[in-house]
Length: 286
Image (cartoon, rainbow, N blue to C red; front, top):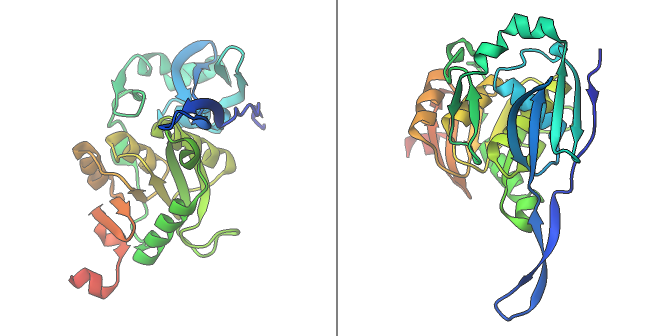
């Protein structure tokens, strides 16, 4: 049975007046920011601050990445109402709550370093060792540079208004129906990078996409939360123009993600998973 979905996207930017250094009034686009309270059936789960560009996918991705909803079959409807600033995810009912033991699991939260204070329900490292990423896939330096170039050229809300983070899902194969290696398949911006990754995760789930042949790019720092979410999406390659945290590094090594940071121009730092990375021989010998 198909999930009943609203399509309640909000505008990404709003125009306000500002005064520049010459005393001139300048119409200026600013990023939207809206509170969106997520309810699972009648239980309040969390309030997310979001641009509101993909609220249904954000709600689904959040519940997936927090390991609250194990299957799309558990969801009957996702309904967004901006008059009350809420999104209600309706499940299959009593059977779902008894089968998943959510009452106990939702009682334990770990505060993470996500923008706007992210949370992970349950034990932060619960089931992390059960995640299996494909060991034989490879990322070439040529594809890495292609991703960096495409993200740099992408027309984004950040270029118009700033104040947002962006995440991109990119192809790592030349056989995708509409994209070659390094091409952007999905690009999401939001006021917090964890919202952007959750929205992509939710849309991947809805579209039935797998992560083994994908690359994930984020403008934000590579924290433990970002690494875990990327691993849960089955994506073996994680990139950022920013740096990383020590815990993010340790978890990336533990789950086997190839993590690359400081991606600017032709510069990058390969931190983990070097066995999957293919660079020209001259680079490897340098």
